[in-house]
Amino acid sequence: QAQLPRTRGAALQRHFCPERPCEPAFLALATPEASVLSQNGRATMPRSTTWMLITLQTAASLDLRRRWLVTAPLGCALPANAAEQVMRTSSDIGSYEDATGSQRAANLGAGSISGKSRPYTGVVLAEAPNSAAGVVAADVILTNGVLAKVAFAAPELKLAKGFYYDVEARAKTGDSAYLHVIAAPKSSLDGKALASRILATDGRYGAFGPPTDVVVSNDVTTGAVRTVDLAFSAITPGGATTPRRAVLAATQAAGSPDVLVLVASASEARWNQGGADAARRVASSFRVDGTRPTKLRAEPASDYRFEEQGGVRLPKIENPLDGFSTEPAFGSSGGLGRPGGL
Image (cartoon, rainbow, N blue to C red; front, side, top):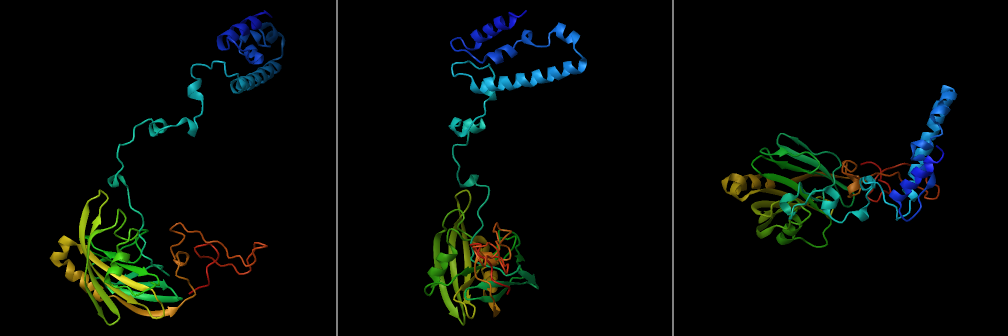
């Protein structure tokens, strides 16, 4: 019986490694004849001792099997299902089909995009906008420490809420009116310059490409408000174009160089069926009801939604050497601290 492990081990060695020797201990433990608990041995041992030896032998066997699989020579053949048990890494994946087991669609055009990015309107809000009796109002933080209360009348529109909107009102007909802030332009903005800012690719109508067929007309200034008519075609997710018309109403708040622009628009089809008059009524109601000084800066971290939109406020560090703040505050886009309250 003592010769059986050697004979069985030699057979396993020839089967797995015809040219190179494998781990002898694994081959010995791989054979049931090599068990230290033979039939005769088990008959003379106490039951507790028998179970303890069985546990120890099982653990040792599993450990040696694992070591053999890890350290076996390259020439050794692995079991038939070993390839299925090997963990894959990025170096093993050469294509989308290798990674997923399925083929990817040949074209990923604009139509396959599930959604569009949040438009940039330059609006920094001190608090949530509100709507009462058809008038939309909001407190907007502007350059030079100015907090401006802007408002416009839109009784036919409903205040839009959610991550995608800043100060905006919409209707099921497609009509809309929203606020856009141009921060401290370096020079005076004429009608074409205003239009280029509104139709930028990071704005409301540029998510799927810059709008085309842009026409600027009726650039008129009345008092402190400048109005401009705008026609353009917005790009849709599928790559088509949708003609749209708009009226821009631009003004400034006292003490700040920022330009506040209300964009009231509708589809071209709706424009010719009452949309033009509705947009002009909304644009003509745009105004700045008042201003007051604020310590808040016109930057994303000052917006009351900053953390909801993915921002992180870090404590202000008074002494960077000790890492502690004597006057904790929060804010700023760089995480260096938000100045005090309003």
